Length: 227
Image 1 (cartoon, one colour):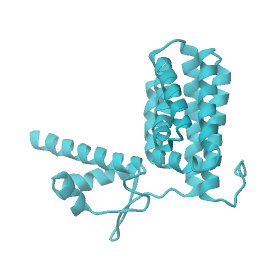
Image 2 (spheres, one colour; image 1 turned 180 degrees about the vertical axis):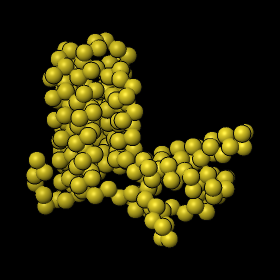
Image 3 (tube, one colour; image 1 turned 120 degrees about the horizontal axis):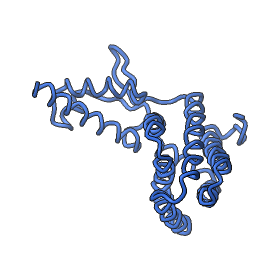
Image 4 (cartoon, helix red, strand yellow; image 1 turned 120 degrees about the vertical axis):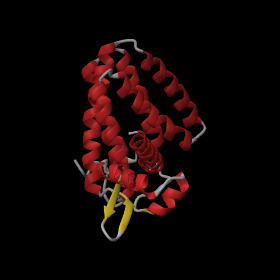
């Protein structure tokens, strides 16, 4: 029993480590994953690595091709759009729920986030702002006070490898300032406890982020052409 528990613990540890590397972009889309190399890096046998990769495949983060190998998933344009559509729904609902809750700890954290975002914009520090974007959205989701929403959102964001996509979308000229302004406006409306307005603004923001990302990925396509 203890041996099985230890094996499961190793599997979860390895899965957490690989997942974090994929989400951060340290492991790029399409990268080949070697069981032997991963086992050596984590100081374990190949068995927990193999099980961890199977788990990550169910999460949509890796693709296991029999007799070929295991690779970090590369989402298609259509898949990115579908994932952003779900992101829009979940974050819109989260903004609505947060606005209805009034003064909760997440609001204070969001105010700090916006102040730090202002400083990042003034310094043109895209790397710092990229981290703040993830924090802003996570705080809104956590501030919704709905554990089921958080669970679904976490799974979705893992599949998006969001940090990498944020960096890509912010490379579009003018998007950095637009994004920061949208964040500030969203928080302003949430603080007025306008639930419907908060959801509408959040959904618009996610749409704008998607449009910017798709324009960078396919420069020939005009913004908003997917809608």
